Length: 431
Image (tube, rainbow, N blue to C red; front, side):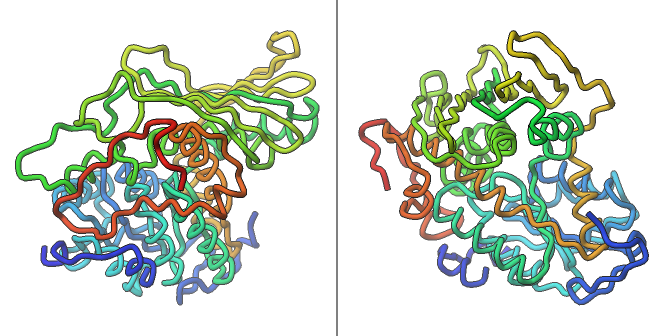
């Protein structure tokens, strides 16, 4: 555990840090892949519960995938993840003690392995910009969980990594699984083909009716940093707040339908039902109005309030009707609210498909780079949070290009890390 005693600043971390013919061969990461036949060796960076679910979906997506290395800050998380993976897919989990790395620098050791072809970046969002940059610099293909960052500085890093991935001809697929769900694909195709006329507005919801996702009581002996990493959704520097971490899925659908990111927004919200210090410094509800090009306005709403009405999904309003979607269904209604089409074919979660498409792109030599899209959608939600936190309207160009907001602690080490107070509109400064 010696590496855990080392400390790293964000600056230090940044320094280090469709298909061809089935018979085609492509050089990738120094290896030649026979399309559909050769193995691809992957490593997992970040071994939490949700990340382990992603790793299992990855292994289940393709019989040629092998897991060869793990990296994690917390030893017990790594051990738990490895046990789950070996139990589920024992013949393709090749991780050894020598390829199990612990510490804030563990990801560097994985990326130095020539045997690793692709990495799964499954850390809390606050760590993703630096690990992504390092992975692309190392020439690895990437699966990046969403969101990509928690602040504008991180989003600018994502955009730079997207450009570098293009230059290196690397695939970079992100965890917006709804893009791979058949009902979403069918309805978005109809929107983009113009069958419903132009998009004129919409609504997006992640009102969850729950309040303790990835929460556990702090235990004696946990430092501030360890506590915050274990309960990462409740700290803005790690998660971006739930508007960024969860609601991104819904607003990604809106951006997809409109084919653009918003140009401005005005948000509000607060912290009223989940107020104790054990819940970190995030809020429990947000509402944001986004304005898109051509005056299109979208209302965005998200909450994590126990006992409240649940609503998770999207409605895209068009001149001739609307699409209504969530992860289990999709339909079209006319201008009077009557259903005129329901998607009745089989539906899957998209969680395995996203990995299948990643590996297909690697084998067939047609890089798939979704990094710019996740950067734009991530910035969409960050901008909404910034507006709500400060009580001020926000413009996209300023938030993305001029904001100096960087939430990352100056040092990453297991020790003291005071929690900033929750934001108060009208008092919290706009940076």
